[in-house]
Amino acid sequence: MKILVINCGSSSLKYQLIDMDNESVLAKGLCERIGIEGSKLTHQPAGKDKYVIENPMPTHKTAIEMVMAALQDPEHGVIKDTSEISAIGHRVLHGGTVYSDSIVVNEDVKRVIRECFDLGPLHNPANLMGIEACEAAMPGTPNVAVFDTAFGMSMPEKAYTYAIPHEYYEKYGIRRYGFHGTSHKFVSAEAIRFGGLDPETAKVIVCHLGNGASVSASIGGKCVDTSMGLTPLEGLIMGTRSGDVDPAVLQFIMNKEGLDINQMLDILNKKSGVYGMTNGISSDFRDIENAKADGNHLAEVALDAFIYRVTKYIGAYAAAMNGVDAIAFTAGVGENDKTGRKNICSSLAFMGVEIDDEANNVRGEERVISSPNSKVKVMLIPTNEELAIARETLALV
Ligand code: AMP
Image: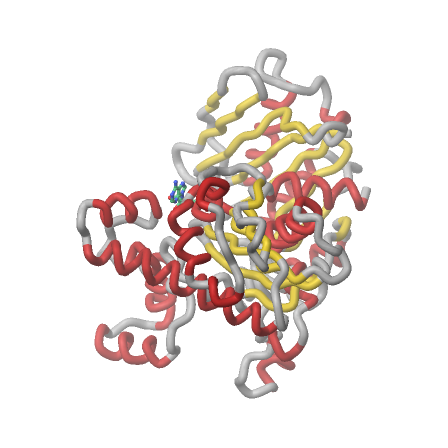
């Protein structure tokens, strides 16, 4: 069975066609600059050369039509007919309080995605456009919505409630939702399986450390807390996002600099994090590491602060769960940065975490990186959000 996975942004569309018989990627690609001049599709069939088409893509519907044509192209394609695609799995950012699981799309599901435009203004409209484009291009093929917020829906009230007047929760659903849910769910389940832990009771902390970064705590695969909040801005220091700040900082800077709230949030989302902390060296952690190696003090502080905050969240979640059986690192930084993993684990020695330097000398490979004596199993578990979406889709169709 072949499943198409779609991840729509406001001007982009990423896709993977996965053969679920052996979970292999048949083709993947990216449509860029949808609705903007200079759109192009880059299509990568497995084992063949990359294929780039530069054609206007005024809408996501045109983009999907081009993806379908590329998938069926006599030379660069991997299928003969779209009827070979059994279902389409869509990454959807926000499901509000309604969805705690993936669901086959119908009119009700589309209504909820639309009602959540306020909560995910950049992503939900694009996600819905992707779904509607697929409905038009492949009538009758089931579409499945896989929500980034679904994993966080099992958080208890004490973890998701903000200490602000309750009426805002009642009126607008203001609470902590958490994001990267597809990755946290996939990695925590994989940590339980790979680490040989009890699937009912295992206490697992997942550190998804990439350009966007978040930590989750789960018991028996169910999320009990996670660091992102109403939006993906809360929590860790990220590439360009500030993570936690005192809200009064906003008022102070806005008054001094004459900014409105949209400009201020733009700074917190796009110009902060390690990018802002280093006066704009880069949002890419590798560049920050290189700058640190060249003796740049701000780069050193940014990396120290990033690691420090991850460590604080792990400590907090270990306390929140009254223990932790496993810590799993994933995503770009988590899978590649052995020094970061080592530094985080060194500060957790007090709870019996002991890293094995030789085992930790690894990139992007599923592995236990703690020593046999470690009281907490530390693992590197590569995330695979597309495969996770495809598995969720398969389970529903
Ligand atoms: P992601 O958002 O998961 O794709 O992760 C992207 C981030 O991972 C970028 O900031 C990269 O700089 C970072 N990254 C990739 N390789 C390394 C590495 N070897 N050391 C540190 N960071 C890395």
